[in-house]
Image (cartoon, rainbow, N blue to C red; front, side, top):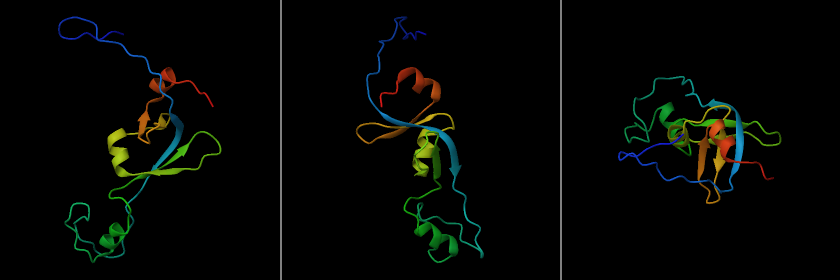
Length: 124
């Protein structure tokens, strides 16, 4: 496949030579909002509109990250499921079968299976 710029020239090509840490994703279980036993306000701590006193506000205030995250279960044996926050889910939109990727600088990302498997070879 070649992509051309507006002047008809082929774009520059690059070959990947990075080493990354990665786990294939077997399952993604998104957090669910708990069922509260009493009425709750319509606000949110992350948006600054919460009442601060209702059951939902107490639950939201106790959370380390705003929003609803997910537990990712790796396909590889010997690795425990791990949590990703809402920001990761929105930014990367991970899918089962793809790869959770961590770069040497600590940056975390998602790669679809086809792109990852065509670009990386297992080294250890």
